[in-house]
Image 1 (cartoon, helix red, strand yellow):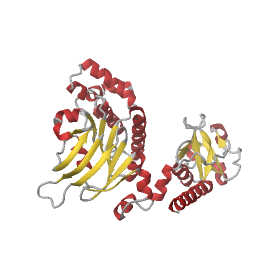
Image 2: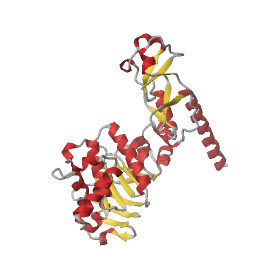
Image 3: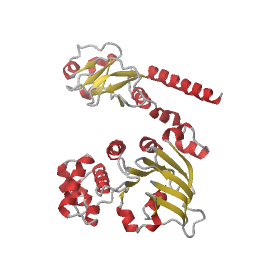
Image 4: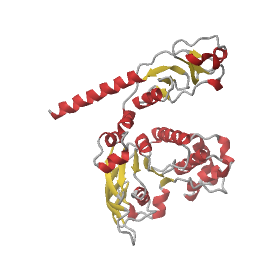
Length: 373
């Protein structure tokens, strides 16, 4: 879909190029993430795709055509673009912001606004937000509007330049999952820039790691980069905990789920209800977890305000990393498993998860040994 061939970008007065002889293929309908430290050329590479930045040498093809032969205005209107600060027009309503590109393409105002209203639902925003102004929205809502605006003309390519870096970690995680959901439904060709290796491995079908000086250090699947960094720079950038990140690619559906004692609000309020074993799990009236109740301090824990915070949650279908994180972050040493509605299903135990990890490691080792023989 997008091809870089020997692309270099140099600026006058600079001792080294911003991008140095970049060659890579970006697959149609996939998310490709450019990641690396500041000043490594990842944003410059992104902006050369739609000719916001012109390459010094080399060629970039989009859909089989040399991008330099396509008028820059036409090229940019054929691609969605989402930036870090959302870039919304403060004097226009949400609907009119989303309708910007269709209106520039000659779509009648009524039809463009109808399309904008549809996209509010697509990006998970309530219809009533359409008549508000950007300043009346939270940061996460503004970024969703930015994504909706980029999708308004139904472009085959979506360029995203650190779109989630300005929001808090909780909202960022929500936006990452929302993007993955959208991609499952829409199958766009997405090029995503980030400096966060965790974000890159969560989102990317392929990840391009850029080194300082605009050099492409490694281009591989997230699992391949975590498992086998090609050099010391990539290994250092990925970090010493890459083995833990790699667990994100191992399915957690084989982890045993055990029953756990739960205390609903009425039971929690009655200190005469004992905790059987070391810990019980307080839940609300809908069966959703509130926190842990220790047996040793049962008499003093009679309301949700008294419970011990419970750590992260694990859901069926998530990875071994999710299961292990839930267990290790829990004060009880037991990770809480919830269903899609957030109701407690049981717990997982760290020791059993570590046994599964060790078995998987041994299987990989035997497979690699067998292939080498």
